[in-house]
Length: 274
Ligand SMILES: [Zn+2]
Image (cartoon, rainbow, N blue to C red; front, top):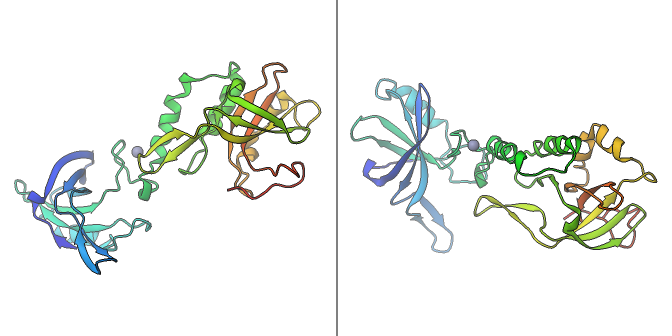
């Protein structure tokens, strides 16, 4: 922890505010010291984005301020769940003290990221999905509701986003078993890009299709009527479920899974998912 002169902090923008504190983002010109294993010395990482936390009236509650500062970690570790504190500064105008923290507050809602290493804010992700509901439809209200419910179960960034996938998105459909097919999904699933912090499609992804028809366990009605929560708890295998589609000719619904079935023993062997 170091004393950071206020003029080192630039481009200060307010993110969130309540009765006790204000959170801002800022750029720290010189940046924090980080140990460089090659050079065997600590070097600065300039123009580091940081979070600033102001406690209202910090001069009169300096003990509280210092106690809170002590609750953060000085370890510069992105993997830890505890927020890193780089140092303390003082606003030149108000004389208020400021904690200079790791960039860990969502710029959208002002809350601490649910996954701070990749700046993942689950409430904001869920909001985005909700706002997107109007932009797609399966043509069947029941199916839409089913997909919406599944989308809102997302709770980490390597989850798949469950979608309505038009059947014409599939190419090279190949039978692997009576109800199991492999295919290429042309647009491909949405994957979270860690660097850009946004969703991008992975085109021409090989996937598995599971056909539900009268010869299989579930008819269309049952498929939708059932509380399908069990479908999304296939954590035993970590199989990703990408969504639902409907075969144009038969109108049967199908489930789209990550390519996880062995081509040779499709019916009986699930190979470990990637
Ligand atoms: Zn957020």
